[in-house]
Every structure is written in C-alpha cells, then in structure tokens.
Length: 161
Image (tube, rainbow, N blue to C red; front, side, top):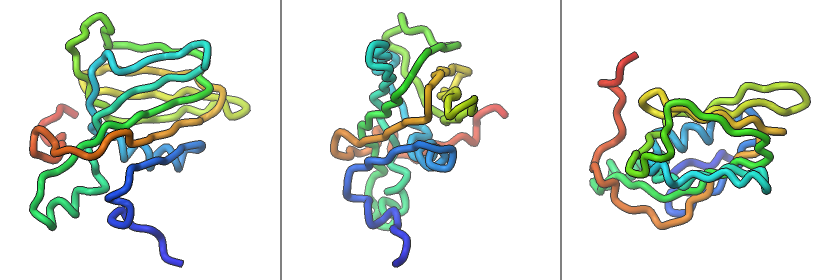
C-alpha cells in the first residue's frame, strides 16, 4: 500500500493528533503562519485544556492552487492542547484585543515520565509555554476553506535572522 499524498486529502477537513515529537513536527508544519486575534485563545484550567482558533494557511493545498491557477486558501482550525498543567507567556498582551498573532512554530521539551513543555512561538518575539502532563495536541479544521485575503503564500524572506 502506498502512502497517502496531500492531494488525496486536500478537499477534506484536516483532523490530526500529535502524541510524540515526530507527530508534532508534522502538526507544526501544518499550523506554520497561522494567524489569530489575541482574543481567540483560551485556557480552561478546570478541564486542563488550552485552545486556539487559528486562521490556518492550507500548505497541503498550495501545489494544487498553483496548478489550477486559483487563490491560495486559509481555513479556520482549532488547535487543542489537552493535559495542560500550567500556562505562561511572554511578549503577548491579552488586553490588546486588536492584536493579531502569527504562529511560527510549535516545539516540545520533554521532561520526566512523558511530561514536558510545549512552546508556541509567534512572530515578534511572543511565546506561550504550556507545561503538560503528556503531549496531547489535536488540529481540526472547523470551517470550509476560503481564499487567503493576502492572495500570497506566507514568506519569511524579509524577516530578521
């Protein structure tokens, strides 16, 4: 049996989970360059859950869009982290409701017994650290894709090193 390709799943909503570093690398690639208002993240302490509603660039659809000459797409996606024990942040002011964040990457620093720290790094030196009991992250598309407002593929060529 051959591996699936992005094109085979391009017309279906994404639903993937990460429970180890390899899975997280795939998920991180999927959410790279997602944007969200600072108001679209929530920690539900009682449920030990941290959620972000992202406007995700559909990297998996890029080649198809180019081949067909149609606009690049974004889709709203829910990034859900379970088993969260503690949340901390730097460089993010939640009181600035108009702030739009751009997610650059996710990384995981393992600790003992499967626990560790999941870090969400944003453009402009913002970061959120989630101390987790175990790595348990899910990405789910929750809307139909829409034309990316910029009309362009996200580009970091002008970003400082």
